[in-house]
Amino acid sequence: MSEKLKENWSVDLLSNLSSSIDYGHTASATFENTETKFLRITDIQNGFVYWENVPFCECTEPERKRYELADGDIVFARTGATTGKSYLIKDCPPKSVFASYLIRVRPNDRINPNYLFQYFQTSDYWRQISARSSGTAQAGVNASKLGSLQIPLPPLPEQKRIAEVLDKADALREKRRLALQKLDTLLQSVFLEMFGDPVKNPKGWEVESLINLIDESRPITYGILKPGDDIEDGVPYIRVLDMKDGEVLVDGVRRTTPKISNEYKRSILKFGDLLMSIRGHVGRLAIVPEVLAGANITQDTARLAPNDKCNVHYLHDCLKSVYFQREMKRYVKGMAVQGINLGDVKELKIPVPPLSLQEKFASISLHFKKLRNESVKSKKMSESLFQSLQQRAFKGELFSNELPPVEPQEENVWKQTSAF
Image: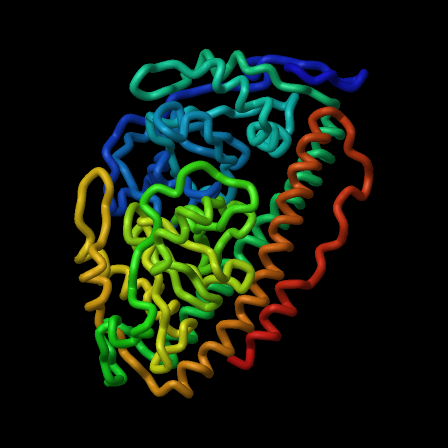
């Protein structure tokens, strides 16, 4: 423990705060109902377990008694890329056991399980795990090393209060994440309702090769091969990693010299151009913001400048759809670095609904993006709140009424989108 603790706090080993630290059951997963659920590392995704999707396993009655999970248990990944990741068991179906690549910690009555789980999310915990991890090909921890973790131990009432505050802050973070996810899903649903699957084209729209929907004076092209060092006050250029969720992360954009940019005048950007990654993460998309008019791109990105037959917001969501993303994978080549040829990009078949319908969708899309930006800001605020509370919680610096009331932002979002 590197932090100075409050006067009435102590530190103890996890082994002294646990009634048991156990390895899991060695068995094969099956989706035939054996009545014994079999929790594996892969069933824990983004801090959640969808128990209805967890497989089953064969298990004798003595084995079940030995490995059966109970609410309040904490399981850890003991090997691989997720070594040290933990999950607090809750709402656990009866007769559920855990697999051998997990370690179960069953807290005793000296420590609150929620408090202990929240400690396992801190940087101090991860420092200890990193110091104890071993293995050349794959890092790992065992039950003995896990038991040697040093845990800050306030009195039980304070443990409970810390857990309650952090649980609320964590729930707020999750609420913000789900709000963003719902917005993205809802816009995709609006697109499908208006236009249908753009690959199967069930509404029978006229179909054009992408090249015929692009401004002839600004053809589909890639950008700078070697932009060089990041130059202060130079010409901005957009990389694939600068593109996320249909937008460009402006703050991270690098700059090249005017001389290098001028060598690639063909790929100079205008406000409203559509960018598509063509190497590495093929199919990532972003619309160029006004602030980056005059910027450039790299060789890993194609610039698409729609003509008057095609609205850029319609084209963006058409190419973004899971159906079109799946279609593009047919053209991806390469092993170490995957890519799609510009020739194949130019020949992508795009359904072309009436422009008035495309523009109606664009209006809806812009409204959604405004709501999404508001949700992103709220999510960042909830993340900052959680990090601040977490840092202070395990130093004993939390006070009463730390959490502000949750504003009804999500309700406002759904009221504003109900018309669609």
